[in-house]
Image (cartoon, rainbow, N blue to C red; front, side, top):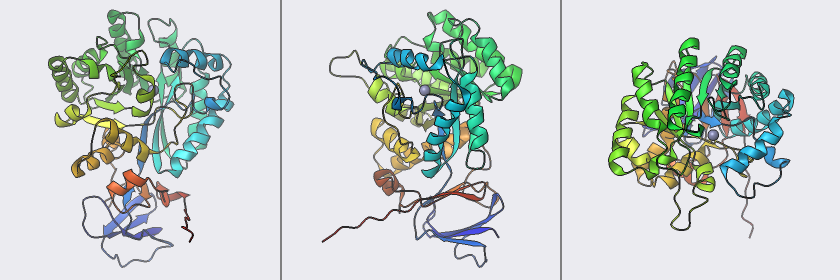
Amino acid sequence: MSAVIRNARIRGETQPVDIAIENDRISAVGPALSIKAAREIDAAGNLVLPGLFNLHFHADKCLLGEIMRPNVSGTLPEAIEITNFFKRKYDPAEVSERAVRAMQAGVLNGTTFFRLFCDVGTIGGLQAARGLLLAREKMKDHCRVEVVAFPQEGIVRDPGAAELMDEAIKEGCDIVGGLPWYEYTDEEARQHIDICFDLAKKHDLDVHMLVDDTDDANSRSLEYLALKTMREGFNGRVTASHCGAMAGYNDVYAAKVIDMVATAGITISVNAHINLVCSARLDREPRRRGIARVKELLARGANVVSSQDDVHDPYYPFGKPDPFECASMIAHVAQLTLPHELEQAMDTITVNSARAARISDYGIAAGMRADLVVTGAQSVNEALRLQPPRRHVFCGGREVARSTLTQELLP
Ligand SMILES: [Zn+2]
């Protein structure tokens, strides 16, 4: 036996258990296992979770906040303009250095799976993609990484972007990105989605788009994305991030689209951090929040995840990055405050994300991959409330991070 975590509290169990790890797998879970292991860890009754996810992270832009000029308007267009300044001279080694630093912080906070978005388009070419593929290689012993070929300047309005996405996929990107709402017209937004599906079918890849990330309630590409997903037989293979326009839909239209999203098995990624600071900058009060209708989606059985879009970049000046903070954020913006709703918030960074990434060997049970986080919290509530340091993080059966915290109240 390579390791055993003793006295672990796991979700859905009333009594503490031991978790045995053999190579990259969990080999046994049960109370007081009578086994010997090279490494023994006492979880001390703390919550132990399977590895945490960040399914939407623009790692190519992360930490540009250290060197950029301020985003004076706080809007998406100005963030794009600032980013383009850097993108014109991106160097893969420099992109990778920033991405690795942010990912290391994420791993310390229990993230064992990242989906990184790299801008692919005629301004930066393939430099961001190459940087994140390099970062994935550097971090391969610490976490699992997917890289999304993401057309930040659109596809129809950025001639050449589709061909560059195809190239980025050939170089190793493994998810087809998209940004349909950014096209000039509804018709071109639909063309954008069609092109993304052509790429996804050609390379047999899943799709993750940024959809209707705007205060305009008439931005309606989610409806077409859901229809396309059903027609192309991509059920369960598509994630749509943001979808803030949904907040402004009339209730009848919202119910129809939510039903389509659930039927198509589309995952909705809520990125509350960025939308709370970027959305509705032109509103006087009351100010909208630009967040998808989380409770209605959950009630209809749609899959919802919460993820950390930005870490100190032209869009957003904060970001730890910590999945617990993401779960806490979605709990705040969607008003998930009852005990079962706190569990739903925790699901967004664990099981729901695993479903979106189509990982079948996920969870704390014999045979599952040993991606594990020994938290410093006694319960889901305490994890979300205090977000204490993660004591031990395992990825593929290997301990990859450890934290200690000493606090002392002096007389
Ligand atoms: Zn994003």
